[in-house]
Amino acid sequence: MPPSARLRPVLAAALVFSLGACASLEPEPCTPAWVDAQTEAVLVPFAREYRSEIAVLRDLSGNLDNPGPLTALRMVGQAETLAAMFEDFQDRALPRLEAALDECDAPGEAAGLLVAMLEREGVEGDVLAWIETLGVLVAAVNAERASASGEPAAP
Image (cartoon, rainbow, N blue to C red; front, side):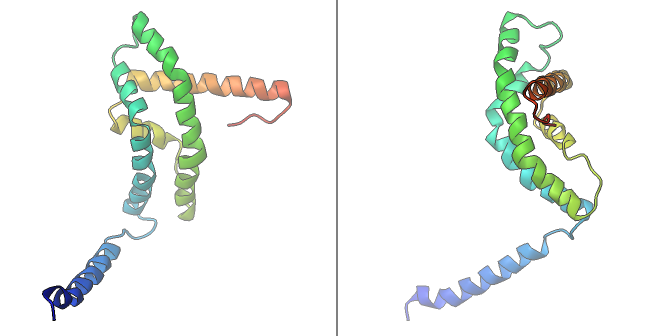
C-alpha cells in the first residue's frame, strides 16, 4: 500500500474533527456575539468591495473645515460614488442586517451600522458629518423627484 493511501483515513478523520470544531465555535443565536458575527459577515465584505471609496473618505478627513479647491473637487467627484455606495448598502447589506436583527426580535439600528463600519475603517467625524449631510440632500432630491412623478418617495 503506498504511503499516501495510508494517510487518507487519517486526513479524512482530521478534516471531520476540524469541521466539527469549527461548528462548535459558532456563537449561540441571538447573543451579542452572534449579532456581532452576523454584522461582520455582512460589513467586512461590503467594506472590502468599497475599499477604494473608503480610502478616499479617509483621505478627506481633516480637510473639510476649510476645503481648498482640490478637496472641493474631490468632494463633488465623490458625491455620486457615495450615493451609489449608500444605495448598494440599502439594497444589499441593510436587508441582511435587519433580517438578522429581526430573527432575534432585537431592536437595533442596522442603518447606523454603515457609519460604524466607516468609523472602524478610519473615516473621521468631519467626513461622517459631510456624508450625513449628503444623505439628507440625496433623500430630499429623491423625495422631490418622487413627488414630481407621483411615485412614493424612497426612504
